[in-house]
Length: 223
Length: 259
Ligand SMILES: Nc1ncnc2c1ncn2[C@@H]1O[C@H](COP(=O)(O)OP(=O)(O)OP(=O)(O)O)[C@@H](O)[C@H]1O
Ligand SMILES: [Mg+2]
Image (tube, rainbow over all chains, first blue to last red; front, top):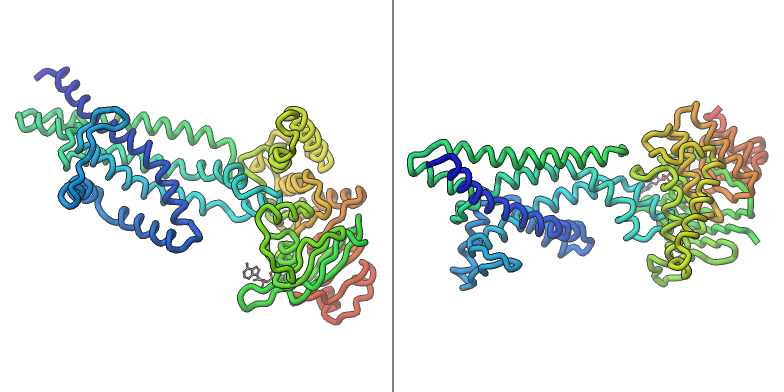
């Protein structure tokens, strides 16, 4: 099999990884913020419910969560996953994978957000208050930008982990890049397995540069 | 009529009673210095005046308007409290500047946000912004920082940061400006520039309350002095009365420790 064929077939697999990556970010970034507000709520039942949920999601393997989303709705509730998302045709397996990834990463992101928000000194809020700002204004005009600056490094780590984690979708038979490479291996071709590393390294290389750029952009001030 | 009338303010945190009934009155343009040992409740008093804490008892009256009355049990919403706050300004010991904004923006931000509530904001947007910027620049000039408008707080010395914080508070034109130990986070050689700014404000007729450990400064700038001990006003009077002829034994003991 030619180098070019392998490259193209692996690339097709990697498109699945890319889809999981993009969709997870698209939904988990905002969902994480909602979880953060829940876990910081002064309404205690909501707070504890959110915290327990986040604890369960962070305390169990993503692989287990993939299995649960894949099998439980169908076996227990006779629900089947839809075959498209925003008009894009995707397999029901892929749909299950996306649900598991979004929930899992939202939980992680929410903890990063919360850490960022809680790291802002109380004096910043009080300065806003004595200057007559509303709670909203304090959050959006004073706190938010400082939180963003503080969470960029941990978010960068988490997002790079996400790139690698997308391969876990193979456990519910999503035909992502490692699945394809393994098929080559079964045919006696080992090098494509190593070749997949190039895809991950290239993708993460770009992300690393991107996060480095954002960090630099925000380094115009300290504190 | 006094510009500020504070009556019998009480405040407890859990079981510790921090303010046990503090009261004083202030005329327009007067400077009040509050002195007293650590833990006597000075910061808590300023925080009550600025509605960062809600007193358990007492009254706060500004220009005849009752801003706070513990007898009046109706709950106050955020918008009302916000409006009441604007009678006061507070300069913190640790500056609390907004690190992501330039000096100019630090001074302008709150005024800009407030101006959005003006009915004519939409029509006269550019003009209003221009006025706000001009006045911010004028205030920065008054605190001696007109060459630092574009700098970020992290690029300034402590004394300069505190002067920005003073400018930021002044921009909202509070009737009463409070300072909580404005120089105690500063190196000794930087306290002078901040005290000079406060001194200049006095000559421009601002009403001020200054919590301070700088006795020389308090004596020279204050019209009235309060010595606080254990959450109470132990001694009050003019600077001469309190510094030169203290009646209370505790006040004398405090000064002899300082000297
Ligand atoms: N939020 C709070 N919760 C519990 N106790 C508090 C709180 N704020 C202040 N206190 C206590 O109230 C007392 C008075 O504190 P405060 O900060 O008003 O004193 P101070 O006169 O400003 O002292 P210093 O000169 O050290 O600044 C202290 O014993 C302090 O521990
Ligand atoms: Mg204090």
